Length: 195
Length: 259
Image 1 (cartoon, rainbow over the protein chains, first blue to last red):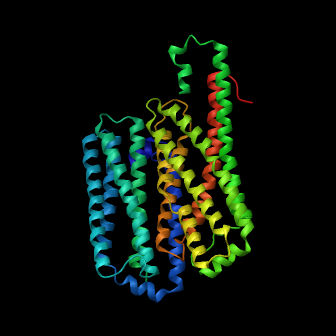
Image 2: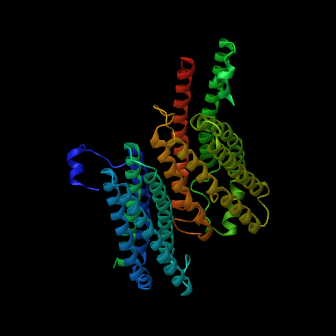
Image 3: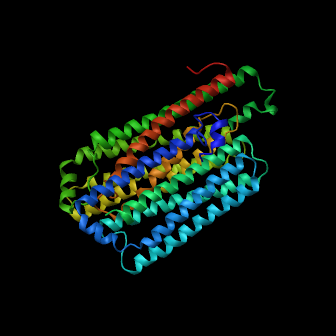
């Protein structure tokens, strides 16, 4: 959301969305940071187990999901830019696209989880799989909430000309969706890539 | 509903009578606000210095170890449970004043206020019930350790697992705060987002069913330490904000702050 035109016109301190949303986002980031710290702490205790379990993960699923969320973040950012200059229909289409990426993400997670269950891995298999299922599961809850937010944004945008209050709502919702994206990127790095 | 006092069809009410009733109402609301703080303090005293449940009795302990704790701390666990049960009742007035202030935002019909009322009321159960079960466990500490172990599991799981009504209470309250369209809202908007955040933090409680060790066991970081601290912080934040809201209501509608 770093539109150069916006930066020139708006004040230098413009915070997208309302301040309260950022309180929630920072609060959520604090909790996930703790979760990541706990993961790394237990991983340091038993690195061989963690790397060996990590090898069973399907990196393609993880990578495709990263791409999906990154694109959806981009769509949402474009939608906000469009809404700022009154391109309402374009914004609607972009929000729907972002929502579609969310559906794709959940679909892939479904295949990924069922593959793991079939292979006999579950939440109590070992410490790695406990964190794998818990962190991705809590993140999945965020994806679902984020999609509800996107649906709400779509509904708001559809209702007619966008006023300043609705634009702020749009920015707030978009910021939450970016949070969902950034958390996944951290998860992807920690669970799938960390050697 | 007390709002009826100010509706047009009550214009015939004697003005002094109306102000008198309003004063009573504000005073009653203030009592309810303070009872929330009273609950939080008594609950903390009950669970920490009295029953010595800080940190909680670990789910990984053996039956003999648990039975030994109940045998050697019998009186303190009985007192702690008694105090916690006594404190739990104070949650009810607090839920009531939240409901009334939500109604001011919602108008009629106050559907989310009622959702909050029912969820908040149910939450009381998850404080009274574990204190009863701890009482039962400490009632005959000489019994078979396996039975004491079962009662101990029973109490802690009833106490820490039920996240669903807490989430509903925080969520509907947050939504209502954000829906306040008046120029000077009854609650600051950040309080709505703060409640969403608190709601998210209660989710991991449900995970205790899978673990006896680690951060998701009932004595772990994400099931005990974070939700417990945030729960107490929620009471203090809500106390402060409700107190401000009721004071403001008194100023707006009567022209003077309550004593």
